[in-house]
Image (tube, rainbow, N blue to C red; front, side, top):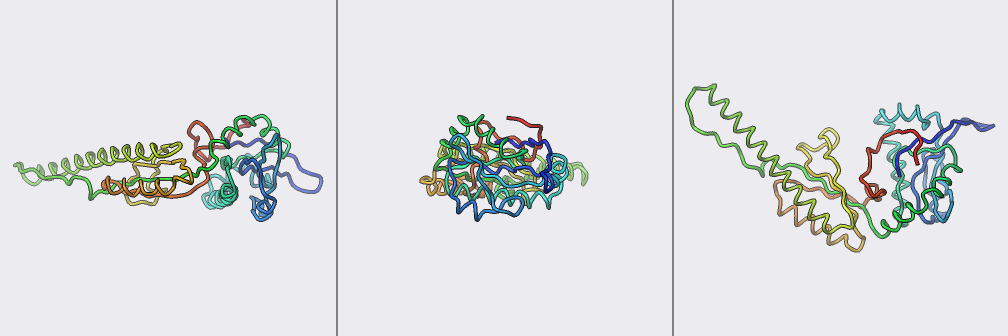
Length: 279
């Protein structure tokens, strides 16, 4: 579901204004899971039911989760990490129990009636997505350049003194680097194609910057794969085989995850966008 802020601030007679943070949509949810799963306000999450679907939500005080507050807080990495971890913990708990359509981070509605309206308006779409996600998990595969596996620059003999020799070395180094990047990119394409062939669905996200990935070399593959739970062993073996077949990139497998990348038919939009109300 899209990231939205759908709010008309309103205060109750006995307290500050609050909104409703949407975590995800399921077909049904066990009362015990709700009682033991903590939402954004530190209290247990709850269910909003409509047209045979269940939205799992938590209370979101507008002083922290209103539209203006969110715009400010989404720039605060400490706040963002805490909010993302809390949201993910709820979605992960739902995912372990069955199919879930995860809501995008910071999907906040005015009240539960507005959430129920969304369930009713999008019943056909949400039901189809739940059918598609049932029995599947998301796995992530990242690929990083391995410099030692790419051709090393070869210094050619020539005249012209130390200055010319330095320029030749630099030119050779740049050429080797570009060639290595092309080789790694080709390997990433081959790996993604092979994995997509074994998955129910696949998405290729933009590579993460090194400052975000924390890796010492560039990322050339950031793939997400929807894999049936009965096919997990084979998928993991394929990743291992591809790692041996393509030593020019280092593969990193993560998961299983809730199907964040596959909650919509089209590729997901940037996860941290705060927008005007949308259906």
